[in-house]
Length: 250
Image (cartoon, rainbow, N blue to C red; front, side, top):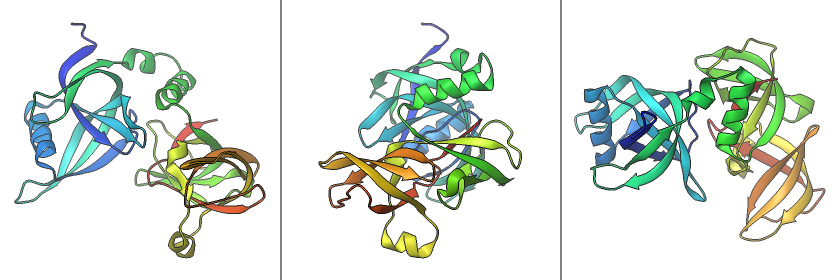
């Protein structure tokens, strides 16, 4: 088997997309994942976060290394700080271990070759369809980047710090999966600022409708559940799932 392939690779399905260079805090409480993480700590090996989307488990993932154990409880639960290392593709799922695993192929040669623009394009392909907004960095602190959206699309939003340096004032693009953009609930609008937009078109109506929404000077795709109904011209308040925004330099 090629060095790029790895059997019995631990897989951790999560509702997030992990990327190389990012820090990802994890709370481990299920027995199978306690076993997985203890094994990774003892053998100093990586595990893989695979995105569990609304459409099921994706074939692409990101290998992660455990940076440090923040806390252990008497019942074996753990708070870990992990770091994304290199992307991979799942070739085959395996069910003979005490935790989810698979045969994977590492893709780091494609990711690491070339400029940040090449890496950015690779990761966009890796993520699949996404919506993109423009903004400007307001500040960076404690692994979080505060970004002001262009065109008055909304308030300053907090994004996960990428694996490259960003200085205050830098223009950036913000990529978000459509599944991570949702209609804000009333309590969210009352608790703090949301992204304010206008519905331009309803592309599809069904169990999950698709709407084109204009935020400031940009248009994005938003999925809307069946219990909400919107028409062109309606104002709409949107919220982003925590940690969903990915930053790229312009």
